[in-house]
Length: 207
Image 1: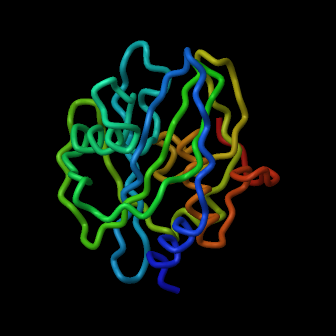
Image 2: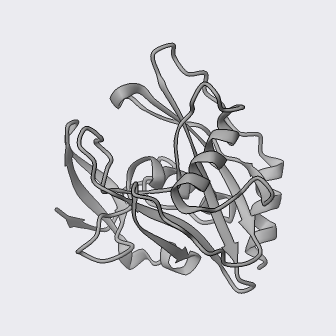
Image 3: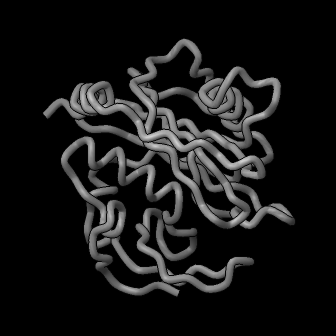
């Protein structure tokens, strides 16, 4: 299967489900850069630097951030944030579609997601907001031995959530909005993540 063409076709055929944010919502946007190496897809994941007052600092995320008043819409915001955070200029890259919008009740965050297909592995230049960056293969995302139910603690309390152990015990797990955006991409390719689309959570526990 040519995963890159399959993903691009699937996104072109499915109109994204857009959510009108509430007046007091915090609108944000992320980009999902994907490098097609000819054999598999590689998705760019970041570990954010820890920052006081940011409940998601130190977690795994896609490049992106808040939509500012000077941005020409959510996609422009995703592209601007990606260039600021990792030095990757997406405006001239191949945008293959928008994912369904996602929200979280915590701080009423509303996030739009945009997928970009890259023909080569780009050089990255991380700013101070980003601790590390990783290209994760489709095979690693589909490795069911990495699937687990994680105990996540924060200002929202304690939660048990579906997650993927991408990088080992010394690093955070993939969970939350980033997990759900990842699930949408895999759904377009005919794969399903536990809990990503209302499916039963499976796997082991990690505290």
